[in-house]
Image (cartoon, rainbow, N blue to C red; front, side):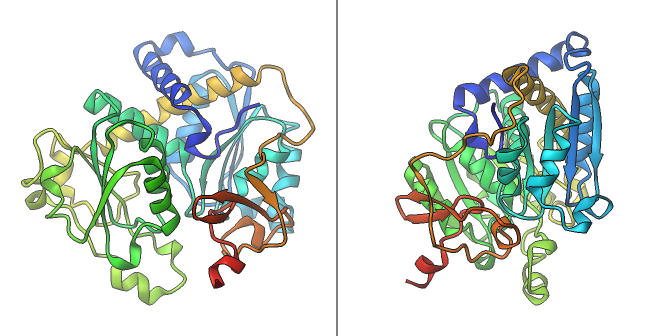
Length: 364
């Protein structure tokens, strides 16, 4: 049984295999029209989504399968207090694979422990978004012809941007990746991500303006400032318009630089940029469907007929169940009765669900 909860759950070879399969599907869609006939995808979306949910639905339908699920947790038994663990144990009776988006960080990880069928993380809070990462990787590969020796600028909300965290993790495994981190102080990358970049040997630097980064970039990854991630409305108002990409700034960029964005955008990319051939974000959306087709097909092939009712092994000696507490109120452990699991890192313990330092270490 294989799940995709974090982009590094797939090895580099497995990731490259999914990308290669996506390119094969693009070249010969008719070949895969019945690849998943008779199989069912459950889309469990506890948080609003347009692109990701429709992309998963379209992907499964193009593979010949069917789709069930919900796009609003309020219309499900979640509104009655049902836990993630119980929901997926019910849904596994009706489906062969699950795609879950949840506002609580770590919820898809909990789901993978109880579902007995493959679980795909379609975004969990501010934590991770691995299928967007696969979409980004496929777009970079098709636009730039490679995934190594690239300088990527990440601009905007680097603190809460799960797409940024996921793509940094994935790109850190390719040789010669260089990251330029462009954000206001309030939206800097979380400290645990700096630790991961150092551990992976990724060259990175922080800058405060787009202008000083543009001339050196192969890729500019824009993000919106996400109002829904802020507990303080005043803080959001202070930083919401920090960075706007327009035609004037694009003139400082290389002719072969590409602009990516996980969407939706608000005002961080001016409409005038849409007609620039370097604007790849709408091509990126279509790539998402093909890479999700490849992922669904691959995970179902790996699962075969195996539908165990036992919990899926996930944690090893690097994890511990102990008396420490996660202080993050956006973590699934804050609202559901799950084991308090922590992972050892070079910089101390981290919550297995959301990467936060335990309360005891945070006070030290």
